[in-house]
Amino acid sequence: MIIYRSSQKSDRLHGLTLPETGYKEKYVYIYRAVPKDVTTISYMDYVTRSRKFAEGHADHMAVTEEDDQHVIYAMVKAEDVAEASNPGEYFYIGETPVNGKEIYEAKYEDL
Image (cartoon, rainbow, N blue to C red):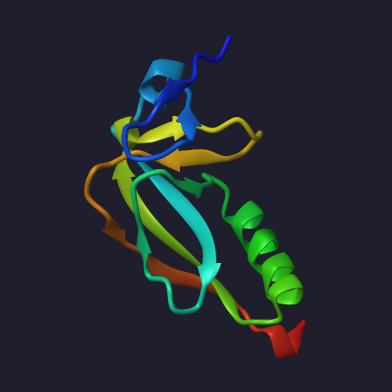
């Protein structure tokens, strides 16, 4: 059973943190598909633990938005990642934004 918690900074609700779900590692890689000018991952941003999922989302968004997208990633504390309501998606709940590193580029003209 997922228990969703209200965020003070957002209307979004998050579930259990990764450690609360039984995740044992202290750190985890997270990925986020975003427009090319976005380079940070901030509080309550949707993220995924799957690079492939993020790349597919970036391709989809490049086509639907008709604009270049990319996937950024970062290693963060597992306690700063919590379940979202969609399978495969999470929220970054760290109070401090993290700088993401580009790992994939989805150019609209190439798709």
